Image (spheres, rainbow, N blue to C red):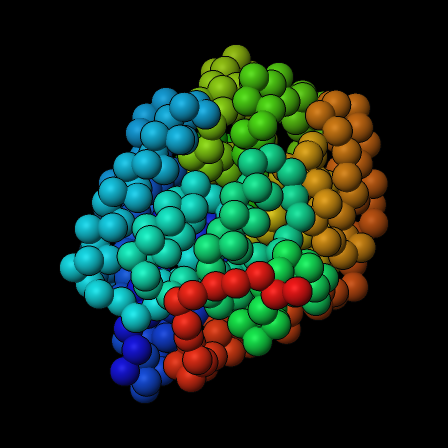
Length: 380
């Protein structure tokens, strides 16, 4: 029986790996090892560990690795601390395979620790193109990984062009899609299950959802960027669900902008939340009139669900997207006009660019039976 260790480091990370965790846990030839770490343990970033436990996953270990400050320097230091902590945990757990997701600094730490310890590394969402430091991190992890699970055909082709061996690459789609393929997407009681602060959201009226993270390569602009989005929302004056940003460099500036806006205007149309379960997040964005910000969920889940979306700035620059997305810069007029256009358009047709909902089971089956070698070489 192969032991597969999955490291979950954030609320988004959990949504991108939940179906894989379930499939590994249920597979007769696999043993799930779960490490919960970083912002997934922190209250101000949503305390995702409580949702993880509620879903029936009991962590084999937890590790605090986030150095406060949310600057480029603290991101680098957090990566170093994470390598130290994860190396110890891998030594104790002795996994046969480590599975890591996407492109964050915690993912980089997982990849470095596992590969130096001669533990085969599996990587989901490799080969994608985006803005910020994420793209560099993602491609670096690709060169450390031994097994690849890209989400799209173009991503698979890029991995081959990067010199990865074809027989190590398995096109599975994105596990985030699995969660939304067969659940009831109605809003019945969703908002009552969470706290947050701000105005009451009336589900019989239209609302938008905003989720905007800092762009690490534009660290000094985070405060101005969020204020442009806030100004657009202020002028629209329609019900808004606003999710708190992630832990990346620049989060303090984004959070400062949100707090100042809330204290100055006390808006009677905005409610701020820290986190939702992956299923409830899907329900909330499915029923919104427009999804706004720079989260990849507008592109992944959004394309599958046909959610009218406005993508702001460069954080998702170059990522494959469906017809549901309008791209704008950090300009309040552009943002406002695009939101109005998308609200008027209403729902788009479904796009299966990122998969059809079987990624988790497919990944588990491949992990159970694939041949693994530690030594890597460029494929010419």
